[in-house]
Length: 600
Image (tube, rainbow, N blue to C red; front, side, top):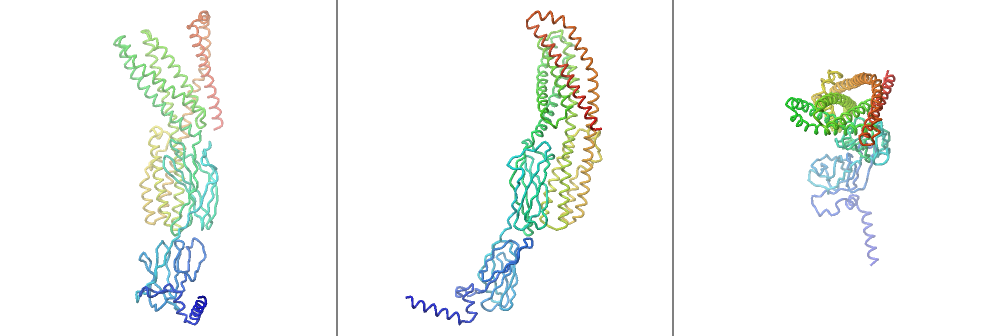
């Protein structure tokens, strides 16, 4: 059989060689069997020319002798060229989605162009005879997002140091080019982000360092946030797409967490002492009425003392916990620690006297109990006022930090609006809208903090004019409308006015915090000097106690019973407390005096 087959192959080759060019093109065309469809348009010598999107900077590519199927990056312009097999006077390139583009005829070839925007197919249609080619597939390739990673700090968990600043080293790569970088963080209070850098034009690879200040970030009760870095490409067709880095969990530094715990416990202590004070005032009124009514009623009035004692014990326990926490809290004020330490000593004395009196209460103690309650009321009123001043100072400081963070957000929004005005990049509008929502949220939080401040702080230490424009939602709405209408210059002007308002508010908070601190320092120094001036009297009183009890001690020490030990313990405790108060006050005076010299 070999000889006949070889002869047949030779004849076929001779036919192709001597056949007209049109017949050879037909044999190599997309329609080998015209009998399959009488309305099928045959095409031969198909060529595809691809012009890629400008942002890719890729050179033009031309492919000859191909099937006609297209696989290209979204946004690529495709020029189709082929030789029709048969008459072709007029036609169109029809996409699967219904769109069509005209076909031109020149030198026996047809030509047409379209842009790849999605998957589908296309056909060439000869309009006069309604002949159509077979469908060719279109595969749109997406531009891959950038690859980005946080290389420093290493590991998955990092703890913010005492400064609250974290140095972040990041690197990113993209196929065609990078545009900008945003740092995102997410915690119990939601998600936020910040523009931290832009890549030089045309750079497809970039690395940089950013120092993240966690001072104005609300970590929530959990004390952690999750950081990620987003690197955006320069895709002008589908819009800039972000590549997302590895996540870094940031734990609030022990110092900051401890400080927040101290503040929370201070608020709790103030509530407990307010409850005790209320019970004390009610009990005093009831007790005095009971004394007037007779002894039996007075005994009944003593029942309320158990509740008061329990309340004081609870407050004392909370206070001791605060002092322990402040020992490891570098953000706590030393003078506040000394004031609370002396408060603790005084409350212990009151508790000791109260327990002793109520344990062996007799009719002769009736008047003494009344005097004790009067003294407790005075002591607790002063303590509550001091705790209130501590918390006011803390609220001022928190509001100031929130205001500074708000200024940072305004600066980022200004850059985004300016970029929108320069480039007209519509993809920025979604980012700007998101940033506006974040601003509204942060302004609402700041307004809540300001509203929580008592009137005496606002009137005495803050510039009220700086806060008249606190309700800025209307201005943000106006800014949003300007942006939507294309008035970018107007939006930038409105934003500048808003930023100036916040700057005035921050300046007022800074001044208020300084003035409030100076006022409290002056009050503390006055009280401290008054107490220190009495230390000599305390020492003389201590010596007097020693002398007046010496004979009693000698006689009591002869008896080795419990009464002797009790008296000796009592005297030793009093001596220790006087020494402790003296030591604390002298340390406080030295500390404050030294600080005052440094500040001046």
